[in-house]
Length: 246
Image 1 (tube, rainbow, N blue to C red):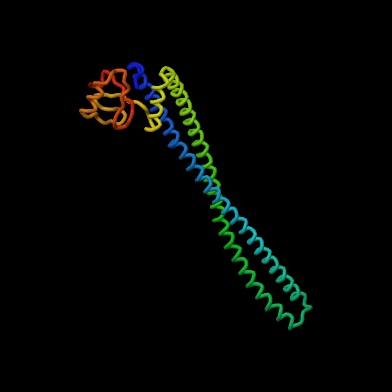
Image 2 (image 1 turned 120 degrees about the vertical axis):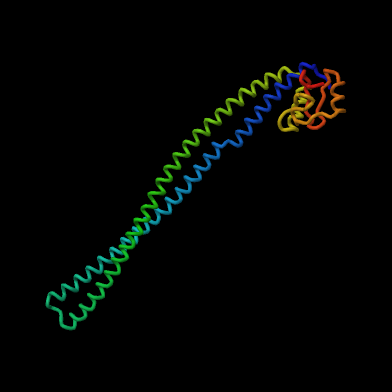
C-alpha cells in the first residue's frame, strides 16, 4: 500500500490524540475519586446499620425498663395495701402473721426489681452512647461522601472536557487522511489497543520500543518514501522522519 509521505506523517498527530484518548479512558476507569465515593458510602452504610442496631437496643431496653418499673409499682401497691390492713387493727393475729410474711417477700421482690432497673439504666447509658456515636459517624461519613462526590463529578467533567477536545482534534486530523490509509490505521489501532502508527526514531519503533535489526532496517531504508511500511514486531505503521536514523 502506498500513501503520500507527508500524509503518513500526519498519522503521528493522529496517534498522539489516540494516546491521549486512551489515557483519559484509563483515568476514567481508575479514577481515585470514584473509589473515595465508594469508601465513604460504605462507611456511611456501616454507621447507618450500627445506628439501627443501637436504636433497636435502646427501644428494647426502654420497654424492658417500663415493664420492670410497672412491676415495682405493683409490688409497692400490694405492700402498701398489706401494711394498711395491718395498721387498721381489723386483721386477726393469724392474718397479721401472714401479711408480715408477705411484706418481707414483697420487699425482697421490690429490691430485686429495683436492682434490675438500675442495671437496665446502666445498659441504656451504654446503648445511648453507641447510638450517638453511630449517628455522629453517619453524619460525618455522609459529609465525606458528598465531598467525594463533588470531587468525582469535577474530575469526570474535566475528563469529559479533555476527551471532547482531543476527539475533535482527532476527527480533524482524520478528515485530512485518505480513506485507505485511515482504514488501515484504525484496524491496527484496534489490534494494538492504543495506536496504529509510530515514529521510527533512531532505528527504534516508538510503539513497541524495539530496535529494528539489520534486515528490517535495510528493508525500510530501501522502501519507496510513499510505501506504507510496518513494524514487524508490533504491526504498527512506521512513520519515517529525519530522526529515523536511516
